[in-house]
Length: 148
Length: 148
DNA sequence: TTGCGTGCAAAGGTTTTGCATGGCA
DNA sequence: TGCCATGCAAAACCTTTGCACGCAA
Image 1 (tube, rainbow over the protein chains, first blue to last red):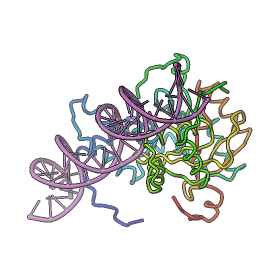
Image 2: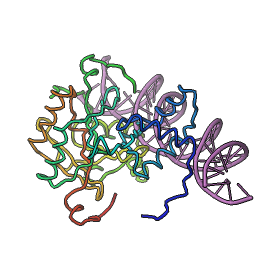
Image 3: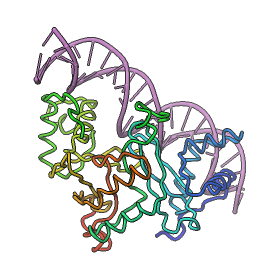
Image 4: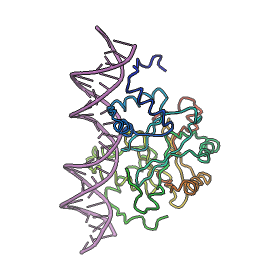
């Protein structure tokens, strides 16, 4: 699109954030998770900075962003082209405890093929979320861990 | 599936809300849109009520719910073709033209089985929406009608 | 009469923004 | 030295929840 995008400095915070994300490729974390991670390490990074950098990385295409709902926090994940050529991963969200489950499943990947071939619909796994009840909540009757 | 769901009274607010939604089938509106619509008509309906009724209608399969982003408000739309409570039905939403596609497909129904057996996740088809690009928009390369 | 539905206000949680300061180039 | 990035706090938003009252069955 644009030719220069932005100036974009290379700050310490950005470096550390990116370094961390690279250690957990494909894993989705929320902005709050990131803040907490650094906080525990004694390295405090402002929430605004995390949001701003994450958003920028999304623009740059090195990080994926998943919206799991309305008031729910967005998830981000470092996109490691190496381990996931297609970036095929699906998400299941428990309607009871709110937990987001990350799935790498070949069988589910066929859904995309089926939708394309039979229904001429190009699936966007990035945005698609399966809603339902997770194992813990179903088994434990009321809830499993109820983290959100 | 369930035997009684809930008592579910037939209140004035519910009637009016449903009546309004039926006049704009397939069109997606936010809770705020609904509140504003009635407010302009001089008929005030509480925001909580709108959220609660809308959510209930989603459970009943007569309204679809879509996530439009992270901090963005959820969208709802009256399903012209009500979902068969017993049968399986899925929805695909085009990210380009916003169109909602109704699918009755046995093969897709297997997703539920797969998720249950392999991932111990009980799928809720009523709340699950596949996001992607529809045939018309894909064919036209750039866009079809592009309403969002 | 029973109990669900409604509506207001307040709470809860996520993300954005204003502004002064600090650091990269 | 410029200018962007950072951080803190506050604001903006969307959605949920508590509670008393009203209405449907």
